Amino acid sequence: MSQSRTGHWPEYVYVVPQVYTKAKVRLIGLGTYVPSGLITNEFFAAISTRLGDSRSADDLERVTGLSTRHVRASTLELCRKMAGADAPGLIDDPEAPREETLADMAVVAARRALASAGRDASEIDTVIGASSSDNDAFPTIAGLVQNRLGLGPIRASMLKGACACQTEAFQVCSEVLKAGSANLVLMVTSEGLLPNIMNVLDWKTSSLFGEGASAFLLEQGDEETYVINGSDANQAASLFYQTPLRKDVVEMAEVDMKMRELYQAGKGAELNKLLSQYMVGYTKMNGKEVFREAPRAMAESVDVLCRHAGLGHDDLAYIVPHQANSRITRRMGELLIHDYGWPSSTMDKLVDNFRYYGNLSNASIAIALVELLRQGRLHEGQWMALPAVGGGMNYGCWLLRFHELKNLEAALNPQ
Image (cartoon, rainbow, N blue to C red; front, side, top):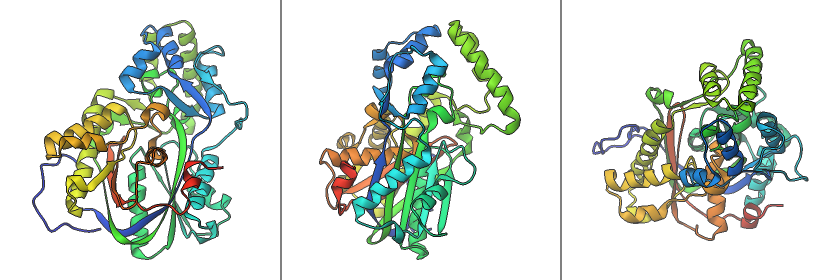
């Protein structure tokens, strides 16, 4: 960890500015994967209407900025099981695999990252994974990717938590490389939150999420990068999830059956009461609290790292945040302007691709980066900040220069 020598800091609510990582690390590979099934707003509009709190598809898009979510075939089947076989807004790809695991998605992303860097899997000597929805205790996604890529018994560590595990993973990778205990680090993430940690019928939460995976390939570089992370359990009630234990499984099955019965009967008030009563196994989110606190945590993380790096506001080309919600992204920009003295042009630096993917938790930043590259907007040598915030509450940011990938086509249009 590095310590700042200056004591002149704004009145941050969340970040501890003196504790961060400065390391010479270079991003050389980037890979992503999203499944080909789609859920449109019509699906969640139908659920809300059945439960007596009617929203149209246009209402949902106006409030969230979201139109479609990419999901696996198995998730579409779960949606039909919960909401009925005739539920609208569920679009299958007949060629998609019927059973696709989080590890399957992560392996695809990892191979694409390797291809984009022109490197061989045998060169990887550390794998760091992150997921909010990996329900397998062990082996982890990181271990499964290590095995599937044919790697030897190298380090394969997994971070499990909410959406800021991606910035925590950036920090772990940076510290591993800085310590010299690895030369080429693969960071993988994979997410399936909708089927794994929430109830489909809890539409105010489940409608925000999609599925996907990402991979970053990192090695030691010539330029300093900066990473910071933090945690504040005082905000835990804003967004939290408890993993069900074996003793909960029978009870959960009974509750799920009762919820489907209430849904078919259109008894929304009773269903919501049941969902609130049995929290174990489902995500619980207080949207108002998340909107109030999450943007500030990300804004502080961006601001403090730019100060550490001595970057002027005009030196930063893009802020590519965790894609939690379009309104949260905009609010982060507003806070940078109004509370930390950034210029109004800051709003033009914000990258938002939430509309077509939804919240992909720890896979979100990589997919937003690929979209930015696909649009031809990210260029050699530009500084970018990658902030994230997640339940718990955890938050962080990675500040680095972008350098062109050896095989950009492998990241943009993978085979």
